[in-house]
Image: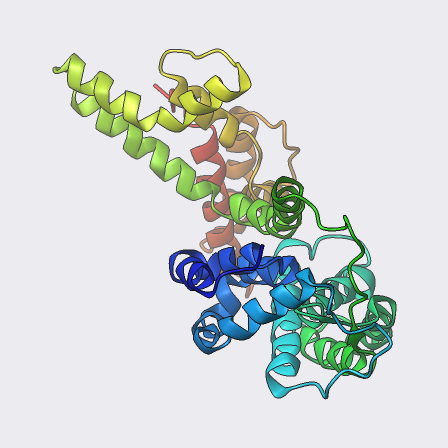
Length: 338
């Protein structure tokens, strides 16, 4: 059954930035690209208002087995595709710089592979594709030249985009029965989206744990404010815990009274980056108690106080010691969740 232009336009209007119309047309690479970039950063989604009829025609030709053979000479790379390869390559590289820069051999392996994946995703849109191995090889060769530079995604992406353009070709014709059902396709797209977003989410979580501290205090203050109206307090707590209740229902886990305290304790269990830096200032282990932290603070404060230490960096070090102490005391504050 052929694809409908009207249905494609409806899906474009409703969920275009998430690639719903591309999923409908069987353009899974394009759908994934839109999911990861929110419709090509918005510009691609707007441009498609005039491209959808061509997409529908291409999808119907694929259904009728009229796709061009893989050895056919593809057309010249258009400026839009080339610019998209460069931009998405830089985008993937930037995400890797944010979420994966702590990994070993990051600038030699992780970063070039991330940029190459972004470039290849764009080159794989529609009926064309490119040589993934040669694209990644170009990234791995270019990366050491710009080792350690935060601007390295740009030249790596340029090299990969040029290589992908030189080795572009048409995708091979689909064989009968090769088209997968919608469920497995969505599952694969979800895994790809998770692989892309998980490192970034992990980084964001570890850098915003202070925000969770603030939110936990707000939740506690809000609930305690209504202590004289138990039914209202219970209703607010029920609403705040709705996501947790849904998770328990799905996983079969048990539900506990005032479970938001337990949830916050789990969320705040790991040491944040600032807390680890503060422990390094005090030369203490992560298991250090509040008494050990306080004792070490007094020693360092006495040593580095500007009134007693007249070195050039004494004042800056004293400020750093006080900031580190505030960070660690906040973590060990007694009765935090009561």
